[in-house]
Amino acid sequence: MIDDVVKALLLESIHPFARESLEKAGVEVTTAKGALDEDELVSALSGVQLLGIRSKTHLTSRVIAESPDLLAVGAFCIGTNQIDLQAAAEAGVAAFNAPFSNTRSVVELALSEIIALTRRLTEKDKALHAGIWDKSATGSHEVRGRTLGIVGYGNIGTQLSVVAEALGMRVIFYDTAEKLALGNARRMTSLEDLLAEADVVTLHVDGRPGNAGMFGPPQFRGMKDGSIFLNLSRGFLVDYAYLREEILSGRLAGAAVDVFPTEPKVQGDAFDSELRDLPNVILTPHVGGSTEEAQADIGKFVSAKLRDYFTLGTTNLSVNVPALVLETPRGSNVRVTHLHRNVPGVLAGINQVLSTAGANIESQVLGTVGHLGYAVTDVSSRLAAEAVAGMEQIDGTIRVRVLTPAGA
Image 1: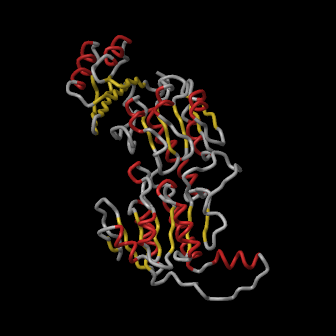
Image 2: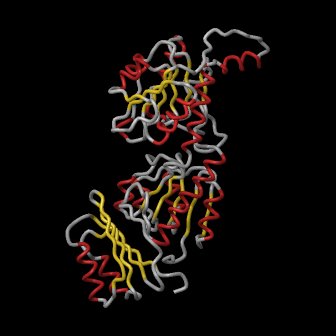
Image 3: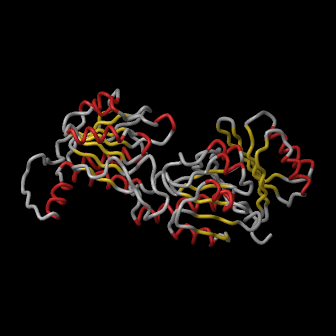
């Protein structure tokens, strides 16, 4: 059940499952390997209703304003800070992401790096490749019995907590929100307390603007001598220049970094960082969630959210509009979706228009969150253009869509 011919643009080498899923639903799909800048994206989105991106393409307010055909955007990753979510909502563009699909992949990378850094495997590997036999235990430790400090106890942080504890690590965590401690993990009342106790500190916080620069000189100075630092969350959280000083001084034993403030847009482009060529430092090119299993799951999950939105109006797990789980309309019912500002009288206005048009309401559901409302109404007959125009003129209306059964 699609309004008209729907076109989708999938960027940044999104898994083929996404294309297959959308094409099965009758969508015309165009794909591209790299990211696009603002001008390129505005041009590419002409006539496109669905957009799929990963972390490097930024859907800004300007792009949204100049792309009136756009109905929904899917972030085929966890983070959504590359999308102006408020501007998207106000333009009637629903946004979706994959909050769970690559959690295990990130956890396994973090654990592998914790073990490699604690055993100083990076230095042993480099020495042996250089023809030097260095069979020394100096500075090499087991992870069993050491304390892991997790900053950000969300989907990734909690799973990391459980698996690290299974390896014999003591787990402490800090989160600004109230979170239930899993297993024997202990909640710390402050970041400072966590840093003073942890042998390994790993960041797993989201990309909200308020977190920018959250880890700088005071936080690094608060870490224990000989401890290890990991960042697999967002590049703009950390002062990497100061991290370099701490590594070179020997006060920190090592670091692993998967995310950077500025990252190349296309695979194979040149990369530079102040963290290159440092001892016992692992640098990876934003591959925390880049396993074949995770990317396949993300491709299926997010494409299904986009498909269900444009075919059924379902907004379940949307990150910027009210979330409604909707069933397939019965028989030949026509579905009308009405995204609006959450002001008094909108639902009454919708029903007045439908009553005037002689439409019989079969079902109706309304969801609100903050300043937004989303009403979905199934009616038993087609609506005249005048009725649709009437709903578009209701005060507070953002976007009206009429979805008709396939083949009707």
